[in-house]
Figure (cartoon, rainbow, N blue to C red):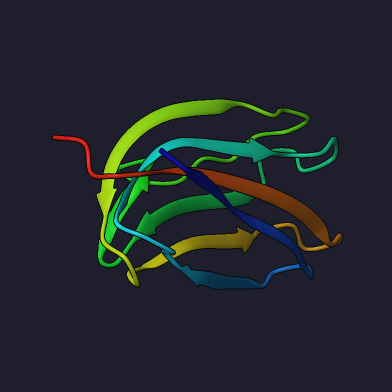
Length: 111
């Protein structure tokens, strides 16, 4: 059973936001979401990830941290070709921030 990682490595200018997308390479299950927040973010950078119209993590609201790199186990079935997305909003009025998000997808759909 193969796995694939989708990496969103994005730098946002002050007071900007965007949604970044990549297609799922096979029918699979998102099994892990990793976030890298560098020092200085001061919980001003909001992030949510998902696929299609579904949120994967967090299910409501956003995650916003500082100097942290947590990983969360999830179990989200995703069909081949569906867009996996990361919404990132930089609420800092002074500084750019670089956020890295890595989603691990395992081939095959969990029941």
